[in-house]
Image (cartoon, rainbow, N blue to C red; front, side):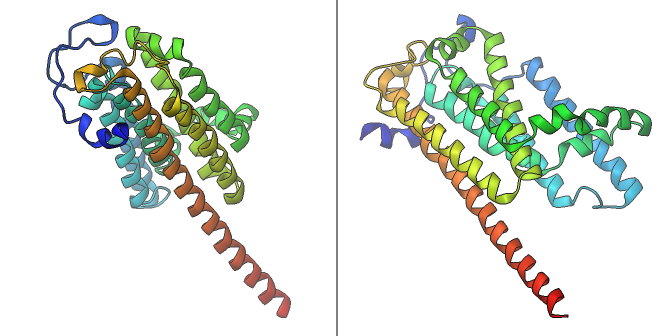
Length: 295
């Protein structure tokens, strides 16, 4: 199948005169993007994390509260997010549906879980003075946050964001409206952060594995719909596919495969890891319980 063999090659091909979001000429060569609406939040997030972690380690000791490996995971997640939103991949995504889907998957299934694993909220709070830190931390202890960070709620909100933004008229609108495009990426990132936070920080490993399995199923269904659709659903997003030697339908099929296969592999791998953790913890708990009873 031509679409299956084209994916590893299409991003290496040069593009002819393509148009960016909003219809502005973008030139012939891929380029980095330095949109202040993206760069400023990225720099703020990095600054808060570094300052907060340094302050915490100065007070509690190196590696206390936030482990060095957690800081490393946060750094990897930040780099993945920055790369997806500012590197030439973002430029490719403005002209090719497949690249746009790769960008979304990096944000939601690579950057978001790595950022969550780095304990960003605790680090960011430690960047503020003690009194202000306590006030800023109160919403995290409130009823609204507890409801939002329940695994079922987070899964539902993240799933709604994915399906809503993939409605063809709305998705095509993001190609020409920069504000909508930013809103799409922001909603994907925020709901993904909430989703992974709920699963990795709050949920029981077995419940988290179930919610990952459900997410794998419904995103797989959406990816399959794009892959096997008999006609082009995203006319504006796939309009420039010919510049890379693809038909619009082939571009749509490749985008569907990106959502369906790599994304599904990540969800399945994390679910299996959580199940293994659950089994290991259950085994330890059973032995401890029996040891206490034997005494």
